[in-house]
Image (cartoon, rainbow, N blue to C red; front, side, top):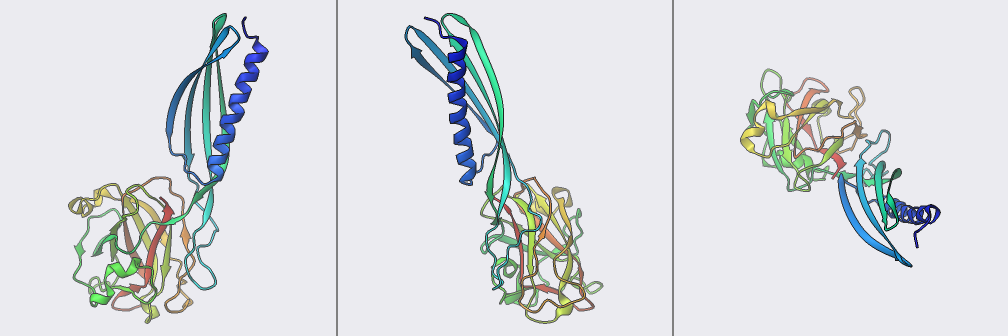
Length: 291
């Protein structure tokens, strides 16, 4: 006995509702639906008729940068921010019966859910201090221009405002075009969408005012020295007010920007400071985004 088209439609509708429900639940739970596809085939028997259902599912999650969210509490401690993403899933069903021609039905659905916002740089990451370096250019010098062992680059990502990173740079333009490159351990394909600075303990004149952030998909030290391995992601404010001192050992508002490309390493360079001083210093320069 052949299955009527209305019954086939009800079968398809039930399967569609089940798949859509699963996708919605996954997104609502914050599960990241990275680009992928899968296929399954199963036979369902109704009376004397067997229906073969082939299902192909593909899904992609596209991250969306936050714009006005905050990562700080009243006690000036970073917290986790949840932002919204959109996932699009295409389902193709091919139904075969013993008494009719194949019926292929394709449907596309879009669901909205949440994706966790994380700190990309953390204590213990590989980090190298640099100077005499411009965005897009090769590294002019590394290490050797710090105040002492308590003010090394690692202090910029240790999560503490009681430590700081100080770099003298060159005599002609102290502290400018200094910074660091870092290879995060948490992921070799993170998507940076924000930077979060905190001021050091003294000398507001040394505060960094503007900064560039670049990304690279190599982790080779020799290759990272070359300017050709870096792509500019952000060029703008550190979040530190150039005219008003926000206070010492203080987190400033995060600077959020649009970026959808994943990188394995990052290079941060200070391009201006508050006023004339012989160095640049900051207690934190964290990179935030999607892991």
